[in-house]
Amino acid sequence: MPVLHTPRRTARLLLVLLAAAALHTVPTAPAAADEPGWTAEPAAGTAAARPGGARPYFYLEGAPAAVLEDRLALTNTTDRERTVTLRGAEAHNTADGAFAVRPAAPAPGAGGAGSWFGFGAAATVKIPPRTRALVPFTVTVPPAAPPGDHPAAVIATEAGREVGVRVHLRVSGPTLAALTVEDVAVRGRGAAAAVAYTLVNRGNVALAPELDIRAEGAFGEVPGRGPRAVPVELLPGQRVELAEPWPGAPVLDRVRVTVTVTAPGGAEAAASASAWFVPWRAAGATGLGLLGLGGTALAALFLLRGRRPRCGPAQGGAGGGPSGKPGARTPAPEHELTGASR
Image 1 (cartoon, rainbow, N blue to C red):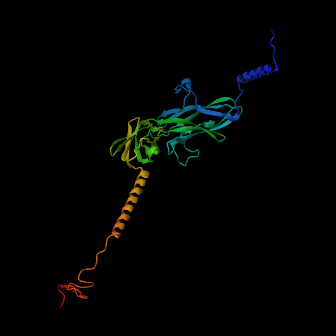
Image 2: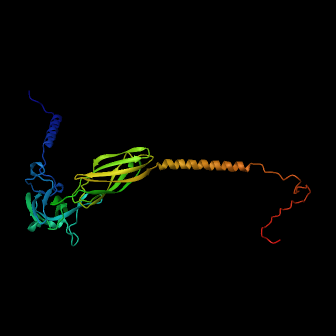
Image 3: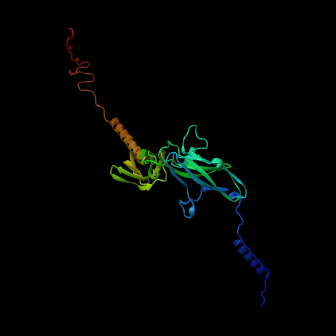
């Protein structure tokens, strides 16, 4: 039997077909504004740290005066040529512990690890469209370079955009893991309480610290913060100022807070500070109440003193002396002055 299509049914079928076509449509390419343009990463190597040969960073180690080599992979994901400039940079911690690199123009005479990098003629690279370029570079370790970690990065720049690839660079020799904890203080009260402290890397290797906060009050131990990793990679010779939330801070107590920090390699340090916890609002209200009560009591005392009866005149007549005669005055007693002439 033939199926009759009414105009309404035909329109409904057309809408269903259009919706199905829209669901199966694949966009041809993302908008150019959404594309990053190009990427920079370590070239795949035999000592890969990730499956498939990809490396999240460079790791280079050598003795003083050694020349270390590696390759950077630059990938152009657009349909136009890209011009990328390369340089090495020394890394450091910001005041709050973030990883950062030195600016492109270091101070004259600075001998940081950023000056050890060499790119030869490839310091400026032109990458054709949809092309991946492998750029070799070298790290020449100075003969007098001290042993330990020298954090650095390879910086790629194009049209104001910078991409940094970390370089874990170590000079062979004795290593020392050492740190100190300084400037421990308790800030804030209640739910906003926090323990502030400063970490200083006194050794020559990068550290991944672990923190433990304990508190002792006037009535015994106060809940602190158990051991936990500090989300900071503390580079050699760097100082960072950190704060740890303390939701278990007491309401009324005098506590001594001890901050203990450990790190792989045997590094350990501790420091303490004392702090008062007083609910100042409640104390203020109590003080005002006591002050008002004291004022009321003082006013009542003055009223009672004002209502006491006054004593009358002495017996023997008004203005009379002991003899009872009016006008008679009691002679004042004589006082002898020792050594005075008579």
